[in-house]
Image (cartoon, rainbow, N blue to C red; front, side, top):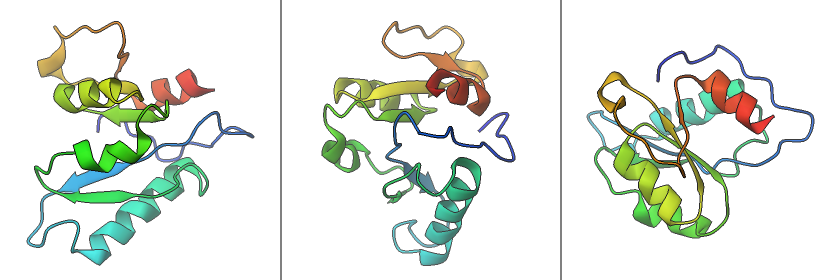
Length: 127
């Protein structure tokens, strides 16, 4: 994602936790590639601290995120997405969706889903 910081230090008492669901292309589906999953978890922990994430869900490339998000129904958890469709899904499921903007999304507006250009903006929103 654009402008990804090398390190985000979590606030003393985190305002929320994130339920990350990640997809990635590889020879093996992400759900079966333990090495790739471990590296994702390690990267998230390095960036956000060890307590920001309850669990990391690694989905196969192109997999729907509906099922992975259902346990967080009406939780208000922060859901950061770079696909409009998935950000809207998180919003419909009662999560606090945030859209990571890309150039092709410049015309998109939704009062319920703030659009940001960097992880720093998300950090500042939560602080």
